[in-house]
Amino acid sequence: MRMEDGGASRSPRRYAGVDVGSTATKAVLVDEAGTVLGRGLAPTGISGEKAARRALEAAGLTDLDAVPVAATGYGRELVDFAARRITEITCHARGAFAQRVAELTLIDIGGQDTKAVAVGPGGSVRRFVMNDRCAAGTGRFLEVMARALETDLERFSALASGAEKASRINSMCTVFAESEVIGLLARGASRAGIARGLVEAVAERVSGMARKVGLLETVALSGGVALNPAVVVALADALGRRIAVLDDPQYVGALGAALLCRERSANRPT
Ligand code: ADP
Image 1 (tube, rainbow, N blue to C red):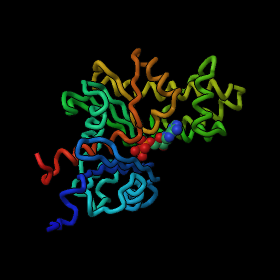
Image 2 (tube, protein in one colour):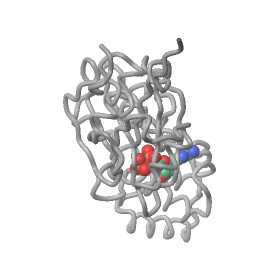
Image 3 (cartoon, rainbow, N blue to C red):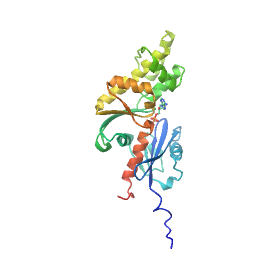
Image 4 (tube, rainbow, N blue to C red):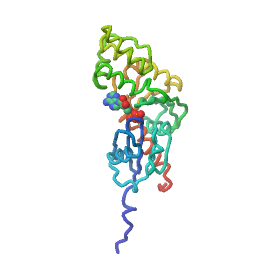
């Protein structure tokens, strides 16, 4: 006789994490072993909840009732279907530890916030600092400056990398720095030099945050801005350290959320 169990005992368990960021919402789906099955991204826009659904769908999760979801990020409270909500510092630490399995200083540069986290054994948070009050040292700052230089983020990074000399940027306030850029252009400064100056200004600010939490053996970078090679180089120069860009850097928080969801799931067989 065939026993019906609705397939529950046969279908492998899965867990999802969704990181509702200020700019982008990222989702990661993992299996029982913590292996990544899928990743998805959606612009956050005006509805964090809708963005979370879209990102999860893009990660390969079509039936939200079938899988526990942990929400993190600035918009985590908006995800009403989440089984649990976990702070982004905890999730980033866990996601970074999954890739390094050693103590590390994690720097995460996102769309509108930047954080530095000293990550201890097991992905525990030793210390952290976070800047979520102004755009200085974030992706948003670089986006505004790229626009002032009439270019996009990829060309902006290439311009900065190719500069022979950096123009000094004195203000980190987005509004004042944009005026400075316009003034420098009017005085004939090169776009490449200005781009380099802006990247160095970001690196200076962010490296100060990393020093505050302490530089551990590995210094790793996550967040969407980790995809900007000029920032990675400038940060390594400012810290005098090699920077390890984590795999799929924009998904580190969502990965941590998925792994913590798996570890904390009450129904998980031990
Ligand atoms: P948040 O979680 O705050 O929404 P993310 O970590 O998702 O932020 O990063 C989003 C930011 O990453 C964007 O605002 C953009 O500035 C930057 N970014 C994304 N892709 C790239 C890229 N290919 N090159 C440079 N910067 C990028």
